[in-house]
Amino acid sequence: MELKLSNGEHIFYHFEQIDYYIENAVSFIVSGIKQGDHIILIENESISVRIFNKVRLVLTAEELSNVHYTDNFAFYCKHGDFHTPTIVADFEEILKPFLDENLTIRTWAHVEWGHQLEIEQKINQFEEVANKSVNEMGLVSVCAYDTATITESIMQNLMKSHEFLMTDIELRPSAYYIRPIIV
Image (tube, rainbow, N blue to C red; front, top):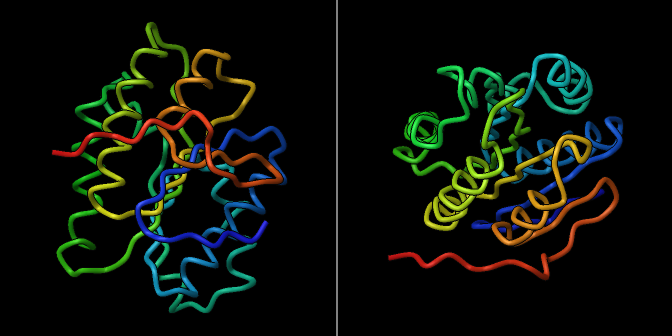
């Protein structure tokens, strides 16, 4: 899937097939790098290895230096919990050096959390804050969720907090999106 994106787009990707997921992540990374963007990849170790193995075949060493990796379990559960203020603070800390240099950034984050109580409420709270941040900072940001790990209720709420909906084979505007109020 070729991804043609502009700044300020928040994308909910619910994936079913890991091979499609990896191909879409590679396409996102390569197209962003070719446009001069820095890429923040927040992913688990086993999938990131597969993504980087494919990206290395397409990008030069210099281009690869603009792809920045963060382990998603450490990112989302730094203190043993999916805690929105901590996640947001860490996200801002990761982005700050790039924003200070006026560099364009794309983020690809595979959201995983393990077994936690009240995860639906935590995800909803996190994605509301993330949606405002993506719009304010003008980022292109993919939030990827394994369809097998989310309930229908979580999926409905994610479609409301993301301007675009992505599956393994398509990218389209979300019919349920509610634009955030930015003050």
